[in-house]
Length: 498
Image (tube, rainbow, N blue to C red; front, side, top):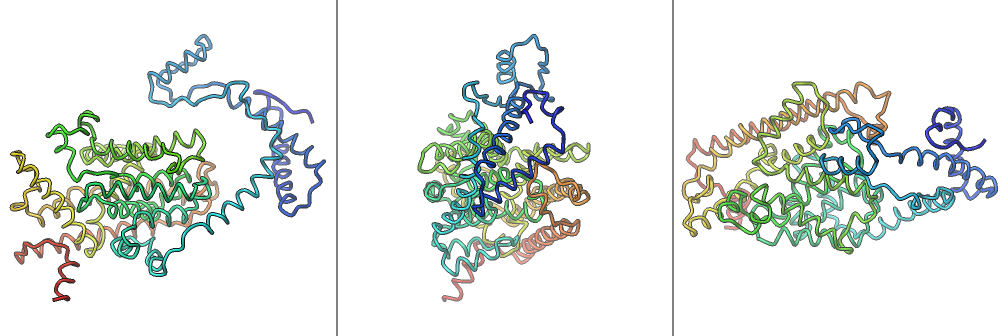
């Protein structure tokens, strides 16, 4: 059968022919795996398949504009180069980089690709597992609770000798099989994570440090899992979520954006007073990837890299607390108008929710994070006093009503945000639950969906139970006139020692 080319391909080749070709490819793979190969037959079959792929490639690389392109440049009168220029200059759509004609892949080398691909994948998985350093038994025991909402990141940090971020990130990308899927080099991963932890220690912050980054990375994982949103995502999107969480406060100075703007800091000058720290976090983290020995994404394709970078930038910039109201309002409007959920917007909201999540966890965790955060606020207040500036809200070491501030934070920020996350997740997941017989071809994880509406209800009741308990605890402190809000676990330890 002679191969068809161009746009006539899909109309001339029947569905039966495509099915036969797929079966043929699978049979060839099986033969390769058991080393039972008739190379002449294999060559003929692969040449035929290559012809089909080559024709598809020719058809698929014809220039076109998306249906939702704001400029609507569809006239054949406009040259391709002009349309590309207009689209790339006057819209926010990233123009894909097309190959020059002479750079078109030669699909007839598919014989080598099939042979190499099978064995390279298998070898890579085995080599990766063997090369990964073994975790001590107590760390492994701690990581068994990784899927729990109130996972104790402080315990992990102590057991891993202050390397909770590195330990947890490695565990999560292996758990989601992202290391093998995207061929993340082990040496690069270790170097990158060491640099990442070093950057988080740059300003010795009480709160915005590597432990906080580890906590938020775990919380993003848990939110995706508990809400079922994980099954809505591609593997690349999961990788972007975990990476964005891990870097979201990289090289944080321990001060607010308002403080940077007010003192006209170098960062404020660089980023023009807009999302000052968030812009630095994501920019500095991506600069780490510019070095060959820390580039964990070196094996991503160009389209994968562009998609991941775009998503990570939007997610990290979305952790700017000043964008909270706009984020919440936009998602509420989307849900009320029954619009489809925009993935970058949804994932940005999830990272933002994770960033403010400790009041929605058990008191044993919330009561340890609060004094760390307040100490960081107070340190900024001390600086402001030294500079003769007005002390920012909640930064006055002598007059800040900690308990009242936490109650208000929970009622007006945390609870509405988590309620919105629950509503958003229901809109995303319930249609997937109701239509399990027709898996989405764009979501590989969909086929493994084991989710019920009861799981979503359980998640909502869990965080509501924690926020109510935490508000009650703070009210009791106010009622009892308790003014010492230090880490309760540290106070307990001190009493036991005494």
